[in-house]
Image 1 (cartoon, rainbow, N blue to C red):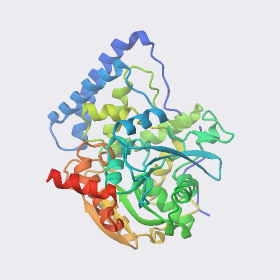
Image 2: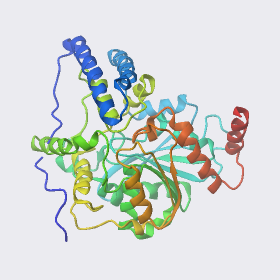
Image 3: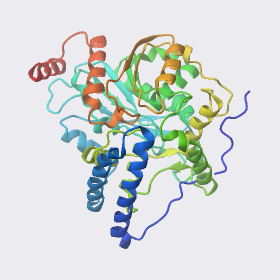
Image 4: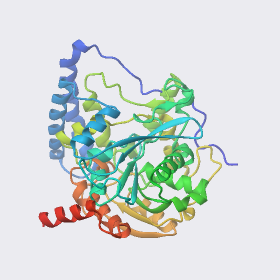
Length: 433
């Protein structure tokens, strides 16, 4: 048995600080000023673009300040359901229960409102988010709707700990034990529970799996721990897949040690998850800085405001430390170091989509993953020259350069007979040509 690569937690907290509401105006002014300076620094670190690269970020800041003053951040199940409805689609909420006591929420989008054939049996697309994210990402960026219009019964998963999956049979969110998990548990417990729920509800034997970042990490863990479950995955679409993150690029390469120390510091004062208190002045700007640093390169005011209604979502400090430990050790392994996860055990066919501007899944990492997987059916490099890790889900351009292409490729593979959904999708395409 190997040495633990994630040491026993000391307990860190991203120190939660309170700011009197009376200081809102000063807080907004100072954070806005700091944002303009910091974005210039971030832009120059992330790429060779000149100082003018900070101008779009400043525009984002102005829009977000207006949103913050209006108090526009509303989160929760009802908010997401109403937004899906407003977009013209039906939504359902389903619960999955893990073997270790967590209750996970699945969002199902079976079709459009007033559709007469909602009971038509469609192929199932299961979409899984990445780190500090949730099912809401695929509403905001629109990937869920591209898949629905291509004829799929779409299910959006939520890992334990995020805003939609924060319940346990006997633990509360204030209990340290609630947060004692990483992507090991996402693969060992969360994915099996969610997939079983989806397959049981739909009567299907397998799903089309679309994962972003950690959503792919967890799938690789699951098929290593439960080899028989590969049959539940008809095909995997891996968007910016992440394993040991051997070749970190951009701003995060400077901040890995700081992130690790922050996690340890948080644990030391009894905080075991990363989250930002939404009540503090400057919340929007602080979160936007973080999101831009981790690869939201195409940030703009309106979309960033939509993103911030649901993101960043809470995650355990252990999850972050597990990724950093894999980076340091050069191993894709369990957090106790006892298991090296083997990509050759991933027997389902895999399509890989990647970007050269992705700090976590760049060219070298993708080449290593592609070489290790036994059944890679396609490797697609995105054409966009400035497409970051978070742009896979959030960018305005993502629908055109990624989401519609993914939906089209999956439709070609799985939809054998035209359904009312598919015919309407084709009609809309023809009208736009």
